[in-house]
Image (tube, rainbow, N blue to C red; front, side):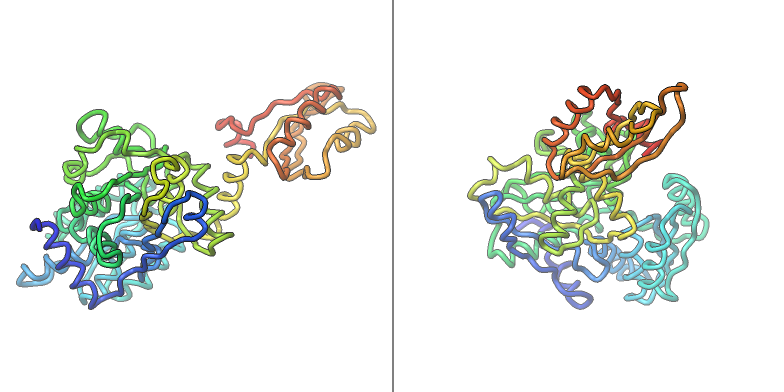
Length: 412
């Protein structure tokens, strides 16, 4: 047994004085769909609804064990790391300062305050995370505090590896395949270092923040020019230096990128069928199974559902993205004749399963015609084949803007 494995086991044992191990649950729905033994490691069921408190606990306990005087702990985070650090500051009875962007939703700020209580002060600084991070690090330097990285720290990596310690114990050995999300790399670096070559591993990142794939292709961490923050728990501009050193041996083919809109279909499915609330990053591993069907058939597969901090105010957006990806909702700019009966003629083209979800006159583009933004939902994507043919036959000019990101941003 390696020193890393021993340390990860020691960290996991120490955690039991603070919070219970998360369950490893067989999922019948997914197992039947993929003809495999699919188990979910429910990190969405920790006290802070993500695995992040594991790394925070391990790093803080080591710092406190080595220090003669407890330092102030500082972090920069808009989400799960902030909540994990706040929870552990209260547990250890130490002071913490958590820097969060001004744009952080009140729900996340409120939960961080609840977990930290009087042991935590929240500083809202900067519109963007890079500004927030710089402010936190400058504060650390100025007062001599201890900065807690969300992932690029050896003790944090070791703490996140406790996820795998629990999986191995519950299974009585290694699964055939492990699927987990990767953002900054703390969880994946810890689990991969603990597993070694004893199981096959697939890492999953959002397509709009595929920093691991970029690093594997370049041979070194690189900063992405643009990051889609929808899956904010895993969408980072650059993977950690320390974490990448533990992941650089991966083949780029072992890092799957998942489309954010498709990810929404999995979030909705898990909520509606299983009653499991997952944040976008927490659903990455489950969604990736869609690309792995032939590789996992007949095998025991563990998917790490890394977090469930989902603000239900985002549910309409998630449903919208899921419908657009599934092809059952589309948006059009329609050129409508300005004559009596034109709207009725258009409505008569709709089938029994077609529903108008949005109807808005934009402006009159000519005296005899007007532009209309229209959103249509239907029960089956194939219904649009018939409907669009009907548009053409009736002489209604249209433009499908469903996948036009620029127009959608302004109009939808």
